[in-house]
Image: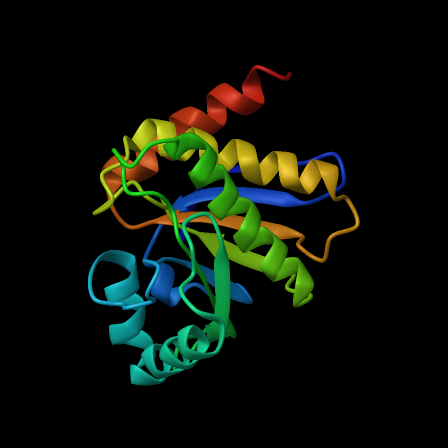
Length: 189
């Protein structure tokens, strides 16, 4: 990932905003913008499945068989197949137009971070959840994702998570993350 901005939070955690292919991230975990059935066919999910191999889909099917659907705003974890990372955390953001989208997206981000912390994960890469095929406005999604992550880390200074990469492949989403990060963090200086 090509890093454009980096912020250090009060407890020492690092947030990085950059551009790259999340399937190439070497963080301990990457977040997949998933659907409730964990069917990884398109968007970020399709790219993760293609790059990581069918084992990711097989583990996802087993997870759903054992636990049921992953409801909007919650998350599940599987191995990462042949990806450079160890884990894929599948979080379900809202489909825009379904109602209460901002709260659901914040919940999806918190759930992904909570799952990472429960597994002792130190570094994680997060894409623009709900801002692609789920139709969310990129700027609003970026603001919610960044703010929710910063709030979670600030409220949980002892968490295992020490590094978060906001990683997106397309320039439009990266630009939205950069603008929102500058707005959020520079307003606090």
